[in-house]
Structures are given as structure tokens and as C-alpha cells.
Amino acid sequence: MTTHGENFQLYETTAVSILTTVKNLKLLSSKQTWFGNGTFDSAPLSKQLYTIHVTVSENKTLPLVYCIASNKEEE
Image (cartoon, rainbow, N blue to C red):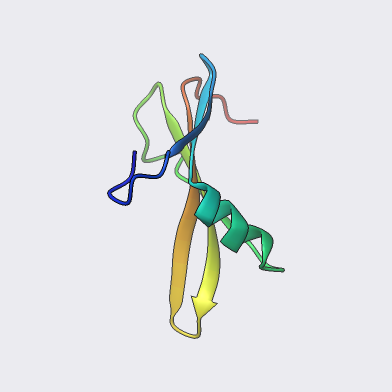
């Protein structure tokens, strides 16, 4: 739950959790360009974090979706 009362967890299995809000997904869908970032090397041995960001103004980029994988395999 966010501080604004929105659900934050979108999807969860034993392998992955996807964290975002409906508001974030609407903003994401309104943008033509998305940026992805995976933290394979700096994440703990059993976890991997992948984020999806969009630019909302000339100097501001926001992470809107967080994916946390419990199985760390580099393919």
C-alpha cells in the first residue's frame, strides 16, 4: 500500500514480484519511450532488481515499475 492508499503490488509468484500502481501504469502507457535498468551485479546473490522509468520533464526521470526476481540467472 502506498502513502496515498493505492495498492503497490501488481503481481507476485514464487519467482518474481512486480511492484507499481495503476496511476504509474497509466503514466507509463502514455509515454512512447521507456528506460529499463537491471541491477544484476549489485543485487544480493538470490535477487535481481529491474526497473522501468519514463521521462516526465526535461530534467526528471521517474522509476514507475519495480520487478524483483528471486532467481538470479544471467542469460
